[in-house]
Amino acid sequence: MGPMQETPLPVLVHVCVTCRREGDDPEAPRQGSRLRDALVGLLPDGMTLQPVECLGNCKRSCTVALSAQGSWTYVFGDLTAESGPDVVTGARLLAHSTDGLMPWRGRPEPFKRSMIARIPPIQPLKDAAE
Ligand code: FES
Image 1 (cartoon, protein in one colour):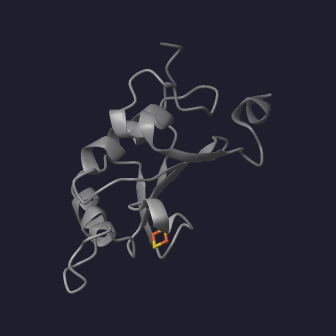
Image 2 (tube, rainbow, N blue to C red; image 1 turned 120 degrees about the vertical axis):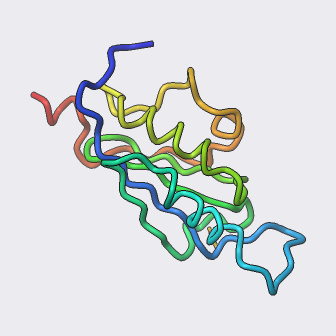
């Protein structure tokens, strides 16, 4: 593992609350909304939970996007209402990144299989530190 970020980056966790999974009961609360509810009690201090309606990944829902100032933004799909602990693990990895990238090692399995995109930062962490 590379050097750890001493002060964790404040990670912003966007959760699509309108995501549902194929076969879900249309009358039941949406899985994305249930995932958001689960994260309310799981996210550590310093991280922000931001519900959002659609991240453009509806076919592979549920979807979250993890970002921080200077870091890459990671979009993950194929999640469920039960993915809260995996989202927290991924967010912690990003929070401790020194280069703005989420390390592969330590990622929960769904985050290895179901990365939809990683989007470059507007101003990379390394430049910001110079
Ligand atoms: S409804 Fe969740 S990504 Fe579109």
